Image (cartoon, rainbow, N blue to C red; front, top):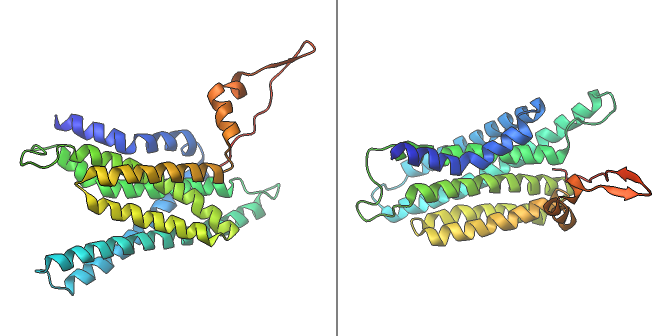
Length: 268
């Protein structure tokens, strides 16, 4: 039973992310480098946030439960702000790297677009964030013990897995929106990304009231996903073309000639 819960929850949490890595990142060495470097940037932000929380707890009264909860909320807010600060630092670094790659290339163009870098960096933030948020929970799922035997929710592992999957998607979407906002200097978009990240983090404090946390978080996922899709150059026309399969299979017959129409792919 423990192994089934472990592999099932791990598949829910990281299955989509693994598929994205294998299909869109693993075949390109440059994208793999960006993925690993992005994870490093997120880890540094986590280290700094942990230091801030650790020092604040050490300097406070540990017997005051309300104060300790307030410090936990404070630590989560600091962690979110540091993550977004390091996302901005990573954008600046990738921007410089993109200019360097364009200079040394034969045709004067960078081998990877800013949208692709935004997507890969967001995916790296999401994967490493998900790993650190759920790894201990997955370890406990192997047993011994039964969740909910003392009246707690029996859906703890399942909801944690779905929450992790949502965070992976959100970081990916935030990365696309954040980089585009930095490039076009749309500061209100940056503010919305940071605000939605803070709201998502705050909603997790409603657990184990999972209906009040998971439902709003997945609403944010859908909204951010749609925003990131259109930011990356997507359109309703492309969605309809994909669903109807006309772009992949369609063939025009004009005066006895067969032509395959060219698609306009959605760039990251």
